[in-house]
Image 1 (cartoon, helix red, strand yellow):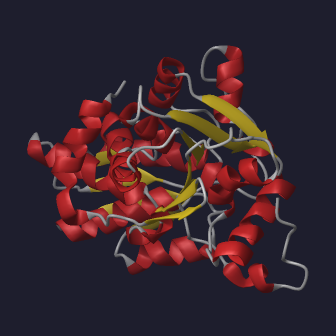
Image 2 (cartoon, rainbow, N blue to C red):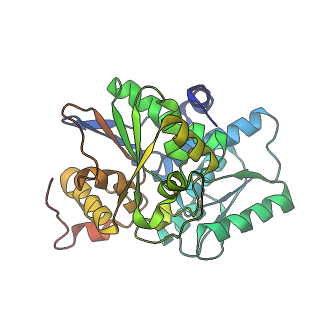
Image 3 (cartoon, rainbow, N blue to C red):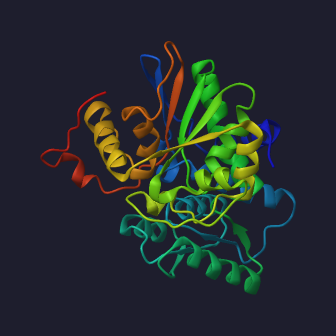
Length: 313
């Protein structure tokens, strides 16, 4: 479990190692442009906090750090490790997008591709940690990771003076947990998930984290089989709700973000915007709404195809 104080401590620890990403307003709608973060996603925040917190405690082994990731978490760990002078080894599924695998190697990480899903890469990574004593950087379910991701919300609060509601896409839930903990009692957090990657939605319905089948256009970034224990606990405590959108909604939202704002975003990121575009979420008149744009590691070639434009809401 984490709280706002953990997020504030993470921000002090990370300092200027991450970018303060901008926001822009379109009426009562605010977009937080976290896709401009180092390595193209919010994950750098948690990676730095995890490694720096371990170093503070004298727990950073000579073997360095190991991560398992569909892509973005691995890129963040590789970047943070390089910046801090720490060896990094990243396990990814064989289905990870080539752009992310190439990025990992460019950052100096040793890359191991295992299995078809994140869970298989995770199992291989944890075995490697057991064998070497390396520090494991979980993609989403460690207190330092979640608290680091939540530093985004502290920035958002300062940049906007506070919002009523935050829409955020959810995979394993680390970002959602950090935001909800940071803004507890201040803003409502709405999780948005594609039907094929609905780990939080399923957990809230079951009353506990459960395994789900993973599929669809956003599976590379939101395809966690099970919501994180920390994320589930924070979601229950702060009354986070989950909305579901279709793959078609996500594709249309991603294209509309390009057409309307010229933002190149991953399908997973576009899920949050899809809830607004499709009417799955209806803001009240005057409601101050923030949409988290959290990842840009994607192939943009399909955004300019004939027929890519969509109808505005």
